[in-house]
Image (cartoon, rainbow, N blue to C red; front, side, top):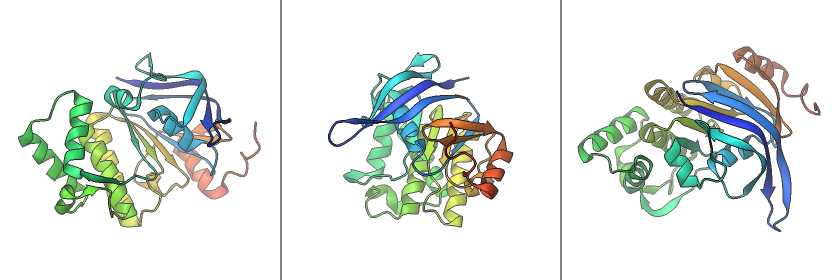
Length: 252
């Protein structure tokens, strides 16, 4: 079993003028293999900052605290080192990569994460099967990464990577944003497959409970002003749907 542990994490964002602004103010969270944790909170509460910091985004500076993966502090690791260690971030706004085909990108990523190139025969079969499950047009494999893709197509390709790279922990940053009902269901089914087949731990960041109809968390955390202010089971998400975050705003 693997464990992702966040201990008293304080993080600042590095602004354009190179000054810093505190965002995370003492976050504590433990996720074990096979667990699904939903992180919910209002806009600007720091949820995406938490996801980007775990993944190693250089825009965010860890002021104090630790991020431990299986007991090893990863705060000084590069982005690619964290990926090889077993972390995956599905981005809220996936970027286009002109000149790099999906085929080359996926195979290069798999090779980098595993430390060896995948067997061509099994790899081709795995890619085709994963694309079929996510209802991705086979022609997309020859297109440049996310170039000219719709929002829903980009999100499905994020989950395609998740399924093929088989990380220990998947961090999903508002994967449900911009998805219609059909695309939401397809994306959610992909996350559930990755979770079930690889005993993957999941951190699911969202504003809304609609994705939780398809991806069932055991733990729900309320995130406000850079820290966790409440936690519970799925019933907490139902309460948030009815009451919103008004009870937590301004809570210290």
